[in-house]
Length: 81
Image 1 (cartoon, rainbow, N blue to C red):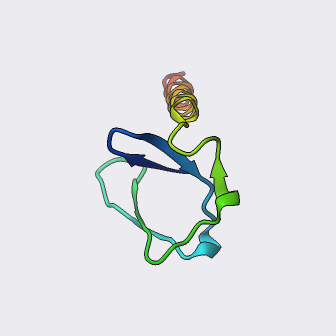
Image 2 (tube, rainbow, N blue to C red; image 1 turned 90 degrees about the horizontal axis):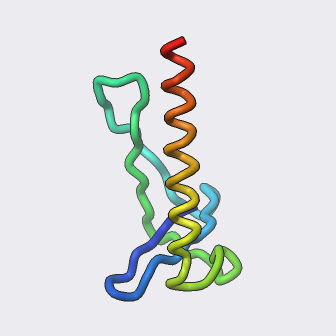
């Protein structure tokens, strides 16, 4: 899932497969988990790849962020046990 923000217009969520041409490169950090830079060059997503309404997926973004935060807390709880 990729979230695109249009200033003063909202957020649109797209389903983008690697087959569409994007790639990732790890960003080295001192931690155990490495974030990645996502690189989109000449990637075109068909209208069918839009998840939810165009410029109206604020709720999808909130749910995704909440899920990821919850997964992080569960992982941290497991480390402390």
